[in-house]
Image 1 (tube, rainbow, N blue to C red):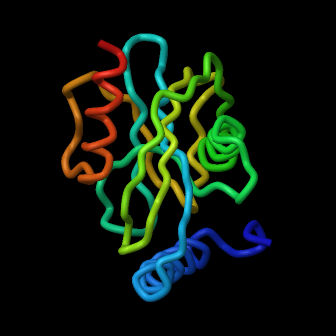
Image 2 (spheres, one colour; image 1 turned 120 degrees about the vertical axis):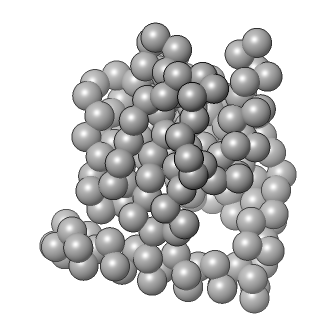
Amino acid sequence: MERLLPRGLHRLALRVAHRVRHRYRLLFRPAIAGVSVFVGDGTGGLLLVRHSYGSGAWSLPGGGMSHDEDPLDAARREMAEELGIDLADMRLIEKLEETISGAPHTAYLVAAQAVGELRPDGREVIEARFFGSGEWPEPISPLARKRIAVWEDDVR
């Protein structure tokens, strides 16, 4: 269905949906789960993305999970959908219990290596680049900064 919409209209719909989802979480506080993926390029670079919705800050790629979805399967699916890449050497590095928009959130942090050429979908992800450790772009989302600190502790 989403491919039937022109990209610009789809990006507008994503921005509206993002705002509605935020308010829904504040009101009803549903428990949700998602993955953040630490995608390496084989030379020490880490992939960061900018979404077409939200603050416009750089963040980690990832997304929501269905109720019975395995975190590694969710990571692979999200990277294929949004960035056109596959993942190798995948491993779960952490499970965090957080609060996002007032709702309980379980974040699965997955580390992997990129396989294939990055092709941001231009709908949800408008920019994707690899950055060297400590060379993080600005602005970077506070949530991404927090999760990167966990990842850096893991790789040390």
